[in-house]
Image (cartoon, rainbow, N blue to C red; front, side):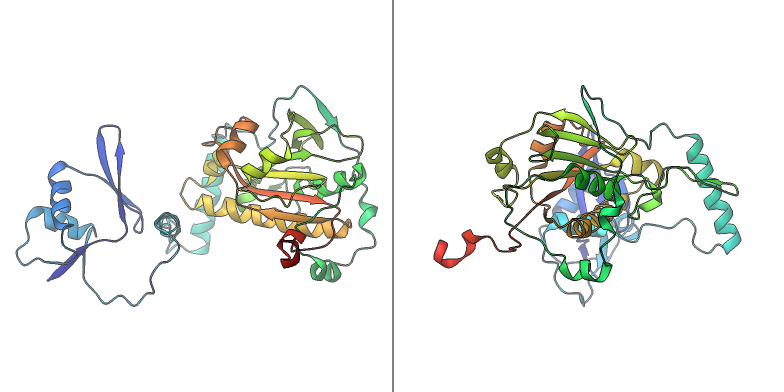
Length: 357
């Protein structure tokens, strides 16, 4: 019978051990030398015939490391090996609740939630140490009284050309509160389930809200320039860093200069340690990205409602951002970047127009 080595494995040197990862089937094996040597020898041929099975071959076939050659009906994966590992490695996570009745599922899930609540050693109410705190004014929600959701949805667009103009403190307060703030302040209890965390205007997996917002103040009424952490607990800006100049920021953003003249920039991070507390699987990373997508759209729509525009990007040097914000990227990492302010309304900057090149 014809076999080949699975396309969905990689090797990791972990201290003194060699680990084989089957990322599609969510399996890891500590690989002994004779197994590695055997796979290394087989890898010299793309397809090979096995008629008499030895113990190594039996083990590799049973554990889907050697797989039968079949006609591939799927199209070719085209966006890189790392993306494939992430995609398959976070797909179809084994479900421990399969086959249960509604009552059995409910009892097990409630029991799980109560168990992890007892072992919670992290704070949902995340605050950074700061030497200076700027208290934001109470959100003036009547600024949005004139808005209609359908009009806002049609007007939403990404701009790449800002005008140098101060953003009012009132608008900043509303924008941050309704995007990142706690709009429901009390924990809720539903029967035996105690709900951790506080709700925001955007959904979040498990009501965890691991996303944090770091505000780069460029041109805001009565607020000193610098980088601040938005403190959702106190609705304040907590000073983190004196800030960086446009040239350094453009380099961090891989040459993208569209933020120039914006009133604010925002770096969105996620707290992996909080997400992993409730969902300790690789799929947690997917949920973190989706959470940031929800928040980014909320931010977009609020900008339009407040008569400003925004630009968003996921292309930047995370290492530089982590250094500036003094983050441990294994616990909290930068994932997205937003800019907002008054703009010309142009999605295509003037530098892109042929006669200006």
